Length: 395
Image (cartoon, rainbow, N blue to C red; front, side):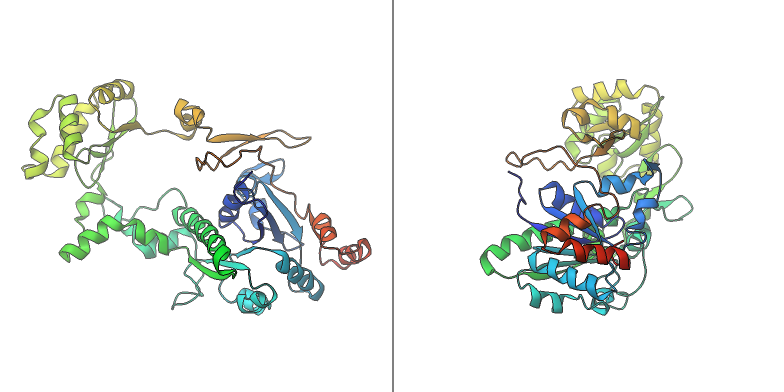
């Protein structure tokens, strides 16, 4: 049995917020992706493709169904409302106010289904002076302070290479939805969930904010700059990225015990006290560390650091991630078989629940692939479905 069996989710997300509903689908929920008839989710056509469909779309939308509805047309809205009466969850990612303009806001839909859990994912939330601003991940990370912390030597902020806010907010949305489902078992009522994509990144800055609140000073900028191309200076020497003679290593000697182990492993016991008493600057210590580490290979240091119990991992490229034996053993990539087409490899959602049944993932749906099936299950006649196709409302 899967955790969310018997839960039906109406998915009106586009692009990366669809990760929230993917999590629910991977837990067993029936996720019905509702797309406008002409183009659907424009994630379908973005980025590298396989079998003429965006690869990222296929990852984010596996295990879902797709139906076409034009929510600007009366009959489609009537069908949608009928779906709402049977649904447990609705997730949408439009700009604040769009669903209300369509006559599909929470205040209206909760009257159709008082047990409905309605989740809105937007850049800046449903209220506040920025609520109606357009935005993407880079904007959310800039506002939250994440980008402002990481800078090059010239002080120019560094944009992360992955959409952190997109994924974090989707995970937060999924957690909030599951919590609301649990609460509903006691209250017998649904509720509204307002997820702002920029907000979670603020909590991720717990340590910098703790320093700021405690001292009333901004964090030392030297902690978060790249003084040269060889290493990243973290909050302490021995915590960051260092260059070996054949690649890069991440070292996590944050605590004093690991720092001492690290110094012994590289033969620099004279540095044990240097970090604590600041007899040398972080840059000076890191320069010395980097010189020592650059003499040997990644494999040499990984083996030695294991003996000395120093937190250490290689900096992988994507091909190395896929072939890593630890990643393989934990099943973090799965193959999705597509009838009549080549299979595709995708990252899996690994939650580690012993009682959550694992099943073979299903491929992302074709645009509107399940329209007739879903509408038929709702009791809509074949004649009316044909009329809707002919009118263009679901075609």
